[in-house]
Length: 380
Image 1 (tube, rainbow, N blue to C red):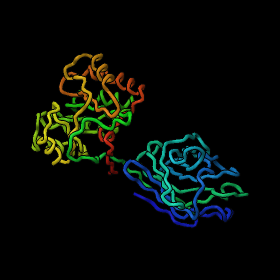
Image 2 (spheres, rainbow, N blue to C red):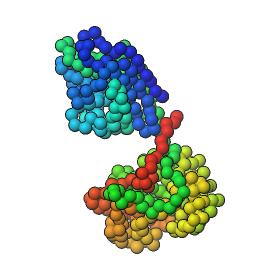
Image 3 (cartoon, rainbow, N blue to C red):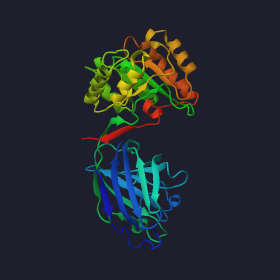
Image 4 (spheres, one colour):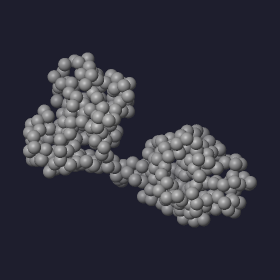
């Protein structure tokens, strides 16, 4: 749901030289909240206050989106510009019912200027503490020299009242890059690694997800169709927490055909609304026939370049040592969250993450490691 505001938006006491707000749109694009605005002249972002004072403050220059929950009290102000990297940060101010600032900080955001008179701000709603609810919003600004009180000098869109916007929940529905072809690793030019887990979902999977969430690390789970019944909520949790699901066949069939791959994809989609784009052959058994069968289902075949043989339960120390010793930029690490007792792998995981992070590695899903992206859509 999007809203648009159009108007002169100029208070009578604002100077004629200040850019005028002409139009503002608030919309939702996947997981991002997007504010687009157009002005009569380019806005000098560096001259704005990223965290402006509340109330009747003289001399403040700002450009802020204000939002408050329908039926709630208090307000959030998301403000553009300021010192430093204006394209990657925005100001966030929380105002109480008395219009006083209760908290303020900067948050990650992406600001673009597609045209001289147009700005587009995109950010994750959660970064601003925004939940899927209905909000009232408007744009407020003071963009030029003004001798009067800030409330009289500020422009707004609309000039009176507010517009309603509904922020909807989103879910992962697919990913790009599902073309036929084998992959064992990502680019060796970036210190990024993908942690992958096979043969689940299992009774161990929630504990693996707990570790990944605590460490702020995504994982890619290659799942067996035969293990999904009764664990649907775990599968949905995998995706909800920013991880990825891949196809691992229905019954762990080595050198599988299309008839073992495609039904697993359909089952994943029916449970989660997510259609995977990655396939992992059980046991790493791959040939041109397997690759073609996966490709016919829109899946890229993914193996690995780091294998601690954790399926054989060699001990927590052995699993840790092999992974951290063999990992290099672009590595895809094979581990298991199902298919047996996975307590050793689970115990090794936090130390693996800490050591690799200490060596300067970052973590991504396999899709991200390969330069592709997950597709998110609002629902409900």
